[in-house]
Image 1 (cartoon, helix red, strand yellow):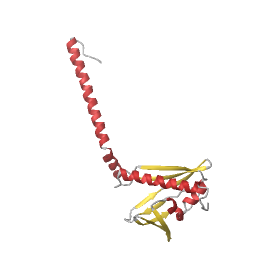
Image 2 (cartoon, rainbow, N blue to C red):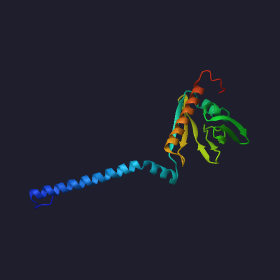
Image 3 (cartoon, rainbow, N blue to C red):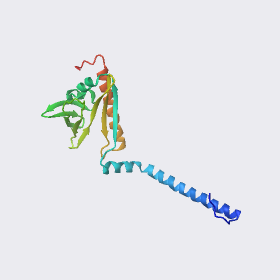
Length: 189
């Protein structure tokens, strides 16, 4: 520490103590600001969700010991949806949409057309008219594949609801894996 010259030992000690006190006060202020920031995490996250151009997301994936083509053929068929998505009870085709019967009412589901890239995106129109985009991909991984679902944290959803949605998607993907890897699945792949 650089101390001014010409000071007595007592003055050096007082000067040094003031410097230490200033450092302690600044550290205390910085810690307080950090704690305030941590306490405001949800408010900041909510603000970010509502004001930024993008939503926070979770990419939920599962490895499946079947070829990417087999998984794509099964998972991209809307008629198989109720077998592996727990909240969909049944589906029926209505023009270019599928109607999914669920506990919250009839959902309109529009699927990406069949494609060579194994993209299974779909838009779900909820009973209140809100549209939810659900990107899904099947990506080759050696002789098996990865099934990836992108979950968006939408406005007006709490952190608890977002985490519950993530758990539901994880369970659905686990069910998909079990169906496809089962030796007696009885499905036409």
